[in-house]
Length: 324
Image (cartoon, rainbow, N blue to C red; front, side):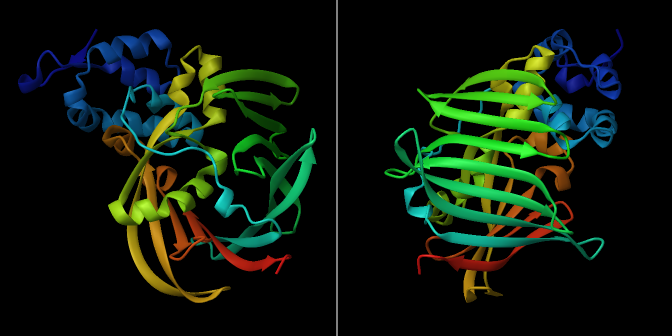
């Protein structure tokens, strides 16, 4: 087996076989385990530098969630701090918002997102339902998401999404400190169970989580948490890898504070950058696929004013509260 050696770091070597496996997108659990045994945590920066070219080819040829899937194996246990999944102060029944998606490169509108909050009763329990609809430029619905929260305390209890483009349905039930996930892709069903930790933030409530933690973020300028990605968990299950690797360490940082004209008038705003917490993951993933920017109002309840992902900027264009 051919290996790369650097005099100062022997015997910390990295097998070219691992790089070639990534080229072919055929990485087995055994290969990852063998590679991890040769890598010292203290040498991650050196490994990233020497393998960057090899990894970049695989990255360019994969979609975002498969790239993250390949690189999650190197994450191990990174300490994080975060709070629970209760958002009572932010769940205001009657609110409706609409966002416009703008392709900054092509200078064109690519679609819209409509979010509505309403009260409902399920199994004799009073809940708050958050409905999120993603529309194409012509108004056609292609993605629908629903989240149910307890009305009394704002705790997340259930989540459901349906993607008309791929025929995929994902549902999460939150109970007994577990997330029970069911993924149905054109009749093929996968069921997963993952433990809920205090620092875990499911993707579906990321915006609510950032709004809730914004006062702490403004104070400390940085906030660490773990992002749970159900679709990644499905890929891990298919590959026979631990579901714990579907937890991605992330860091939110205050990028700037300014004023802006919005549908709510001219208000103070704060821009927050969210990116992987691991230096190695940041090196392996292209920035437009791993960095996200949120702009919130600087005063409570810290409404989301815009969101940037790659070349797409989503901007709040309509707000109303039916109870006002």
